Image (tube, rainbow, N blue to C red; front, side, top):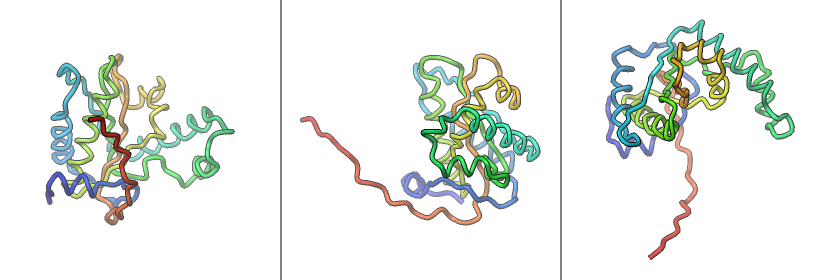
Length: 187
């Protein structure tokens, strides 16, 4: 299944419930190929893609990322619901998705921006193929630790930016109304 770009932009939403069906390696390769079509500062193309499909490893990573986040949060500022979720043994930070694609970039002035541009291409392409994705911000800080970097074999000199889960969604994500844009015209 493919859809047009504007339709993908308007229908892509975060997916957090997936079927057990794995995502085919070829499909993941196609999504990465779409991701690398993104622009990058001075055309550096600094990306590195780490694909994790090992459920046991994702379980361990979820446990460690939750513990790290819980230990580093400012308890006075953290939403109570987030703390409860992190403490819940059933909560899996990667939502039991069949795959995690970590988009990293060689450390540099625009590493985050370059990886984020690739991530948006990746997520739109996944939507166009009928797949669901979600950028797992709760895992980012742990993935930047030595333990997190080692868990995914991230080479030195690379910044982990976008941990994106991907899979076949249980059901389509409902549309979420958008606030009107704040546009400031200068003529």
